Length: 192
Image 1 (tube, rainbow, N blue to C red):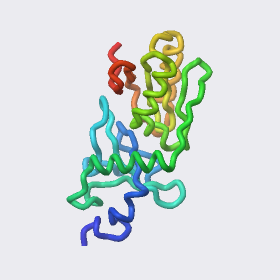
Image 2 (cartoon, one colour; image 1 turned 60 degrees about the horizontal axis):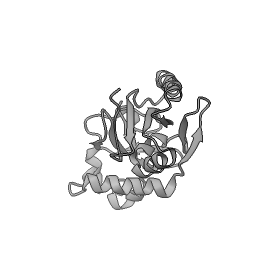
Image 3 (spheres, rainbow, N blue to C red; image 1 turned 30 degrees about the vertical axis):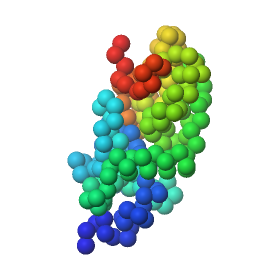
């Protein structure tokens, strides 16, 4: 029996509990098999050096990373990504908070904050409200920071905060800086 044929991994049984996780380093302290992520981890390229991996919510706050051998050969990974994003929207509330230095943060449940990078809608609402491009950092799984690009002092404070979070964080994502362009309406690596 193939792994994806087991009831525990049957795609129809798990598809409503799969979430997208943004990753750079292929480890995660919340995942039951998070120390063993490898080239067999089901993943798609995202932006810059980031990838999207998929996590199945199990009991409580336990998650299991989806490996290639857990998926039937006919599963379309792009369609699974869309389903995972829909699950995230359905189950996790994202709130925008203020930071001490005048920047903003994404607050969710302590596990899915970095997954907010997947949602163009969040960033589009923010650029429309702030009337500026956004400088964004996702230093850790539970930390996403952003600031209006033209507010240089605020951006500098946010970058310092983000670098400190990256250096001390348990589930680091990246110290790469991103830009959400108001004009292009897309997330990209920020070229200073």
